[in-house]
Amino acid sequence: MASAVEIDAMRRALQLARRGPRGLNPQVGAVILSPTGEILAEGYHRGAGTPHAEVDALSQLAPGAARGATAVVTLEPCNHTGRTGPCAVALIDAGVSRVVFALDDPTAAASGGADRLRAAGVDVERGVEKDAAEELIHDWVALQRTGRPHVTVKWAQSLDGRAAADDGTSQWVTGPAARRDVHSRRAAADAIVAGTGTVRADDPALTARDDDGTLLAAQPQPVVIGKSETPPDAAVRRHPREPLFFATHDVKTVLTELAGRGIQRVFVEGGPTLASAFVREGLADELLVYVAPVLLGGSRLALGDVGVPTIDAARRLAVASVQTLGDDLLIVAHPTTR
Ligand code: AOF
Ligand code: ZN
Image (cartoon, rainbow, N blue to C red; front, side, top):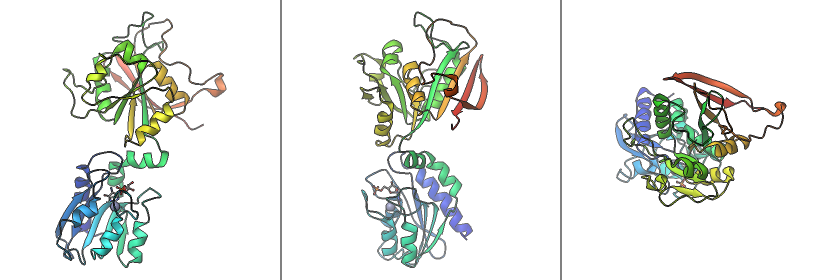
């Protein structure tokens, strides 16, 4: 059983973890407690290539000062030599007598730290404040499992399923409340993905902005996919972050590349061709469909070929929520496992 002091220390460690960046490595925090429950040191992980949280905390202590101490860590101390050495060994060498952690390390490479600590005679307690820790690094854990980022595909459409009028004009199908909602959701992603077709046709800035056009604090990485050229004066080239360009239509490969850069959550806003590609490849985890009460008719469908030649192959979805945003509707749906 973890003591009340240890639970408090874990909550503190979770706060510390949040100071680190989302990225290739998880956000991890650590607190070292004296045998009487005082905080001796605090640490957190500042991103791939930098010391792990436990080592960051231990490095603030004089040699021998952690003897008999308790280390409280938000993730199971690692057991491998990656960009840095194994934390389990660092804790053993420092003479720590008890380790309390929240989440098991989900990676095959780094896991096993708890067993290694126990084998060295360290008392180990796992699962403390597990839900809060899981919430914090949920996207990173999911990426370890799937090997690719979580994908949200968004589009706006008329009630009759068109993205634009026949001459290609599309500003605006949905109203301001729906567009505001999109911007706040953009800001929660690590990357925003658009196709070259949309970049050429609509010239989107791919920034996350508030009502008066001010940039929000969080600006996801802009990503442009497709084989056509992005014009030199395209708005996306003036994005505060340098855009990534992928001259391919293979969205699977792009996702793998993005995962390798620590991108855990992508927001696909790229127009019908790109949206269809993600859906067709079974790579859309979540669909956000903004539906405006307007009829456009014509040929500019919101979605193209999604690999459904016949009704038996229809892509069935489960609706997670329906809400009204001004005059528009937002339907959030997920593919049902077939
Ligand atoms: C810990 N404490 O603070 C973090 C851990 O390449 P490396 O050496 O940075 O190792 C990265 C892996 O280590 C990462 O995938 C995850 O399994 C674990 N992260 N472990 O003990 C930490 N950030
Ligand atoms: Zn480590």
